[in-house]
Length: 95
Image 1 (cartoon, rainbow, N blue to C red):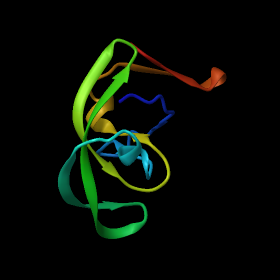
Image 2: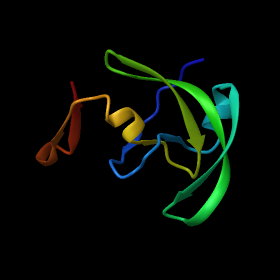
Image 3: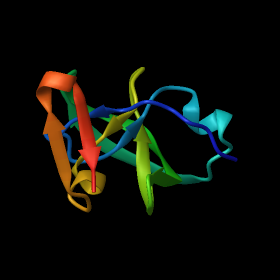
Image 4: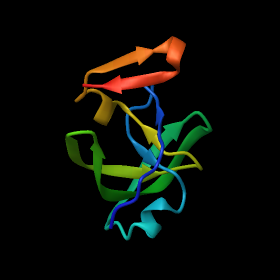
């Protein structure tokens, strides 16, 4: 199943994370659980899901955590792309 969503680009995040409920909505397969630490403080155990992330002509299969309300593109995806930040137009271009 596919769904379009917006994501925050976070070059400080090691991993891509899904907003809460998105994994269930997409019927993603559960891979297990992992301990993570984020801006909320100490480590917590969260579910990891297998997801396919598509942006333009790029397609990545990766494990994603489900933490918080926002979907965030982390360096596990960003390091595979060339990004151009166009600050005056408030957009990021993928190439």
